[in-house]
Amino acid sequence: MAALIFALLFFINHSPVASPRAIGHEPPSTRRLPDIIVIGVRKGGTRALIEMLRLHGAVVSARNEIHFFDRDTNYRLGPDWYRAQMPLARPGQLTVEKTPAYFTSVKVPERVVRTKPAVKLLLIVRDPTTRLLSDYTQVFHNQLEKRKRPQPLEDLLMRDGDLNLSYKALNRSLYHVHMERWLTVFPADSIHLVDGDALIKNPLLEMKKVEKFLKLEPQINASNFYFNATRGFYCLRAAGKERCLHDSKGRQHPQVAPAILQKLQEYFREPNRRFFDLVGRTFDWK
Image: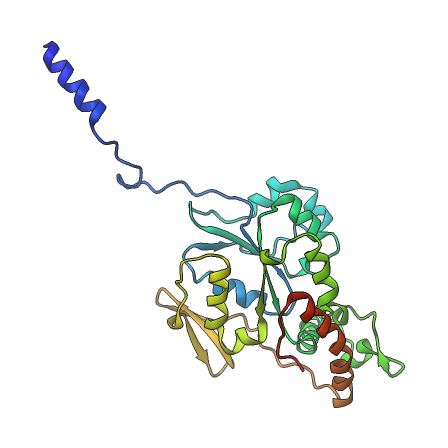
């Protein structure tokens, strides 16, 4: 009997223990502070960018814009509240959220670095004039939905024949002003710039750069994109399903007098140069 007990104990102590995965149990999913934040820019293509990021199996995204860092009422709720807004993620997956208002908010960079100093930041930028027109178009349609009468763009943009420098949409396109603030807090290698104009024309090329920046195993490929001639831009394909961005994306911009467009392009020339110097690259903007 003693020999039998000894043999049983030896077998138990020296038998391999099956891992949870081996017996059919996945490691538990948890909510955690984001590994990646899409900080902006508003109307630069942030929705397209995060939807394309979701094509990668190692990335999970928050469902809505959280506005944790730019809204004092949310920020006062603390990191635990912020974490609770995140999606469930398995070990090895990266969590991402996007709130375009972060880029232009004065308080946000310091708040982000205090909360998650090692976070990776994605900033998508477009031609400043195009971004301004898209910004106005969104506000225009929002006001129509609320049954309000939108102001014509010229009334907002011009004052006594000159550009109205207090127009918020104009200031959002002064990228160098806001970028300087972020670079005083975060090292340049923690911020990746996505070319929003290039993302529209060749989404795969831009997303391969994002994968590399995030150190993701290459997974997004040409089969994930198809051009929708009716919508006039690329849509997404994954797991046998096809989907396009919301109808609010790709709206036609208002007609603007050529003289006003020229004023805008001339005005942005120097700010653009300063932005290029700041980030060490150029973009194909007029």
